[in-house]
Image (cartoon, rainbow, N blue to C red; front, side, top):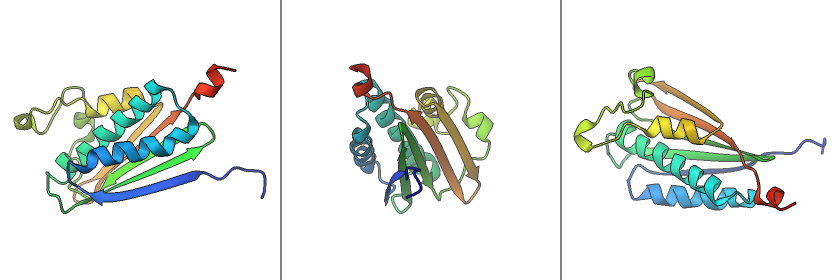
Length: 151
């Protein structure tokens, strides 16, 4: 070993069905629990996973259950990096989509706050998209371990 730590990585892939959103949330929460996050940090992570997966299902695949959603979680030191991607239709205007309250599905009573929530709950947030190819959301957060709070 050269003294550098290796990232601890987990990858999930599942059908773009709304019932799988809860599975994704719990799986990521279980994986990140090894960092001993605070309840607030865990809630933030579960929320951003819910938002990202829901975006893949509703917007990327237009509620078609045949698509696949991929999540990669990587722990490096005290940082968790989450990548959520689909191979759906992509986002036509990413700047417009990132505006608070904008939704492309007003008939579905969507709040248009998904990107805003993800951006505010995480330390880093990046969206890449290509029409007809899909969208990838990459988010990073430093976990201030509860262990550090008590020492």
